[in-house]
Amino acid sequence: MKKIKETLLEKDFGAYLYDLREKSEYTVEELVEKIDMQNITTKTIKKWEHDLEFPNLDIMYKLSEIYEVPIEQLMQVKTETLEEGVKGINKGMIRFIGYLLGIPIYGAVIFSYVFLIVGGIGSVLFFAARISGKL
Image 1 (tube, one colour):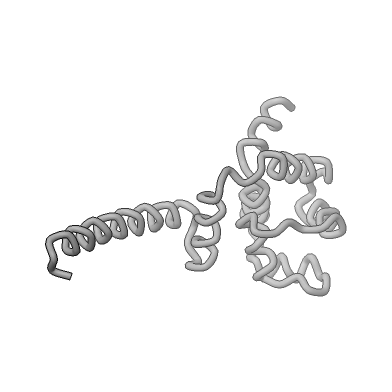
Image 2 (cartoon, one colour):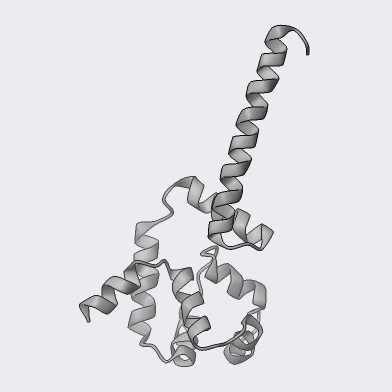
């Protein structure tokens, strides 16, 4: 049990939901059909999987039934994610960028680094040009 607990807590809630869906071999659209609740769309599920929103308790029970995992397990991972909180604005922004661009978190991290490097170089060149009087 301890090994399972450690493995679960290494992930955040969104990654955990994504893994459950992948292991069950459901597409997002199929999961929407299985949940069969008003206002649950593919966009809603993607928000859960990117930790931009969390499902309410009724939906948590439904997910527990669909994935055949104890509700306590889902609640534990959700609680740990909430307790850990967002580790700074960077993580939240990277998740948001990934969601907007439709790319995984790792792609959003790389995109962010490239953006920061290009922006930094551009700023240095801009200020160098201003100092030399060319702008």
